[in-house]
Every structure is written in C-alpha cells, then in structure tokens.
Length: 391
Image 1 (cartoon, rainbow, N blue to C red):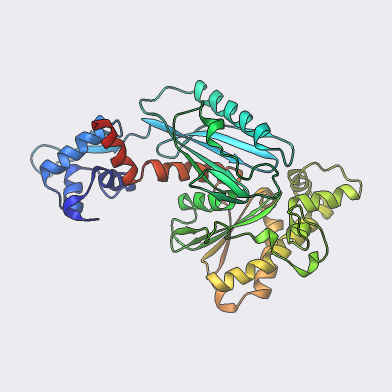
Image 2: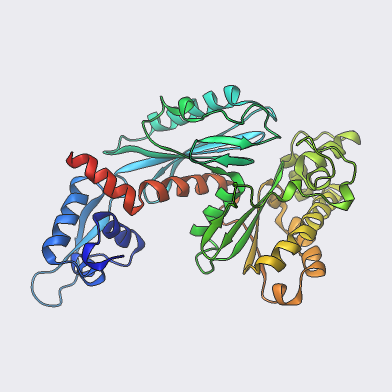
C-alpha cells in the first residue's frame, strides 16, 4: 500500500481485518493526514459501509469514537451446486449465515432443471429476511468441474451433462442485480478454510470426498487453480485398481470408479442393499454397519495413495477432509492416514495434521459467501462503488 495515497477501500480493509478501529489508527497505519482520513471515512459512512461505534477510553482529551464496519448494511448470496444436491444461503457482510436451505435433485440434472429451483430458493430466503440498505452485493456460486470465472460458465463438467458453456447469470438476474462469482466446488471448500484451519497456516490440501472426489489446494495463502482451472482433479487420475472400469467422465480407470460416493453406492446396490446416496452409506457406517465402514475406509486408503504424491510435492501443514464421506470422519480419515503414512516421505508427514472441514457440510456455502465477499469488498471494488456513487 502506498501510504500517502491509501484509498477508502484500503482503509475499510484495515478496519475489517481488525488492525484499526479509530481514525488515529488509520492515520498511523497509512500515513494519511487527518483531513484525508476524515474524508475517506465520511465517504465510507455515506456509502453505508461504515458507522461510528462506542467511544473508547480516553488517554487525554475527548474520547475517540470507534469505527465499525456495518456488517448488516447488505448481504451476499451463496449457491453451492452439487451433482445431486444444491445448498443456498444468505450471509451478512461479516460472513454470518442469516438463512439457508437445501434441495435434492436428480444426479446429472441440467442447468434448466436446477438453476430455476436455486433462484426460487434464494428469492424465498431474501423475502423472509429484513431489508438492508445496500441489498445484495454479490452472489457466490460453486460447481463441480472446471469453470471459467470470467465468463461465468462451466467449461469441463463431464459428470453434469449440459452445463458446459451455459451462462448462469441469466438464471439469477431476477434474484438480484449483483455480480455472479463462480468457482470450482473443491476450490470453494478450500476458500472456506481461510475462516477456519487456514487461520494459523497458509498451506493446506482440502479433500472433497462426496459423490465425486476433488482437491482444493491452498499454498502460500492463495487458492491454486492451475493454468486452465483444472488443478486438484484428483478423482479423474488413473489408478491401477480401477484399470478398465468405465467412469462417468467417459474415460476408464479413474480413481472415482473405485473410491467415489457414486461408485460405492453402485457396489452396494449390486448386492441388493437399499442405498440411494453416499449420505445413506455414511449413515449406515455411523450406525455400526461393518461393510459400510469397510467401504469408506478403503475409499479413504485409495484417495490417500494419490494424496501422498501431492503431499510430497507441496508439503502442506495439514490435510482437511470434507464432503459427505467425511461425515464418518474417524472411519474415512483412518484409511487416508494409513495410505499417506505408507506412501509419503517421512519429512512431509513428520508434522502433518489431518483435520475435519471446519464448517462440515456447510463448507461449500461458507466458501461461496467468502468468494463473494472477497470480490465485492476488495479495496478496488469498494473504491469503484464510491466512484459510482459520486458520479
């Protein structure tokens, strides 16, 4: 930050981070004059993003008033769209969930079936909540597979036919006049960990083990998406145990054919078991079903064998296990640990931690909200909003 030219957006970022709480703090951190700080604070207050809080203890003279980011001034929406279930929620500007709902849909349902339901759910949640001064500032959306964030479309989601190249913004246009922020589901889950396990460490691998299998990579405090957005495609890596097995992606031999939720459910159905979703398998494991527990542990072991390679390459501080299969965390994590400790180097595993996703089955929603908040409350976005208000 150029100290002499710190913008209003940068001042708001300092207040949101907790590094500053008064005008004097802002002057000390930025080197701006009193007049400049007052002007920028006034602009933020007029825009509804900032308000004056309680007076603080005086060290002589008039007690200073605190400056408070107004988290209730507006909201962001979140939509975590999965292969068989979509979750939606409303969050305030501080990241607190205000309302949420979930809806199941057919595996492989297209956008014309899923997105209108998502839009209706969001409209219902908004209508039930209180009005805010700024309204909806952004909508964070996640999808399985590779996405083009700039165009707001999926570009490679072979297990969700009909989504590739379809713009999602038109489906949500009637919900709110706000930007759509789109990301891959595993990357979004990794983003949620910025508010959880990533607080003490900036290097995590986040496994999403559910109907499919994905990996979010958090390295050096940043989400790694790769050159074309395909980083972390763990589930469609070829493994020897899956040789010759057809995958839903159209290829053969993918890890998902032996370790994903859809593959485990298919195996149980072939045995005559009544299982509709991987969540049913997890429930049976938690109830003590020996076969369900064995399947989950074996799935974790197979994922762990591939994960060991990523651990050697990236040397993360921790591996976070999320998704539906991690609902039976102790069983699933035991399989992952067994393979990782057997395959990864001693150095890479010496201090490695295995942790459950901070937000459990809400991780996708929290990640979508964080995606939207990071975008609409970035210094550049805030400054652009103030500029529009002046014009």
